[in-house]
Image (cartoon, rainbow, N blue to C red; front, side):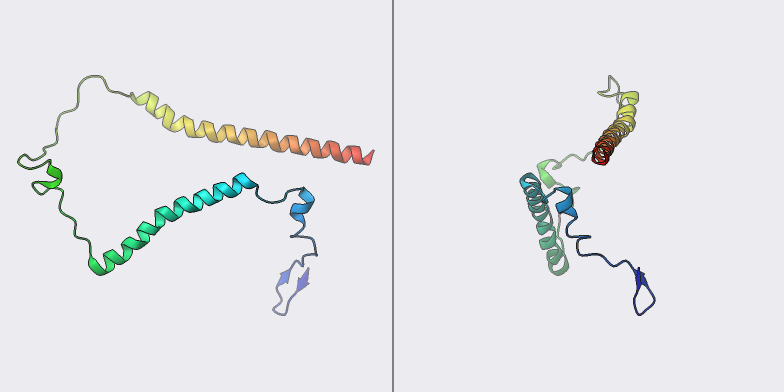
Length: 140
């Protein structure tokens, strides 16, 4: 630990504390599939955000002139009649039931996250045990 002129302390890194970490672990950085996935993600995000960025000047300088969807003739579907929503509850068989939907909405995400957590912990425990066995074999 060293102190700078303002009295704040900081930990001075050695020559290999941050740059050589990947070399010691045997990792060379992202592989080809990871690079392709990042490139695809950047392409998708660019295709998503560029139209949004082009819409901002349109709104600022020209304004948005959209027709009202309730005007007669909009979408060629409301020429003479007007839509009146039904006030009655639907009768007959529903295509889903409440207990099944509730169980799926509650337990599916919890189950997926729980399974991922268990797999992660088992993989970490396996790495720790392999590292411990390697350390013990080096000591012998």
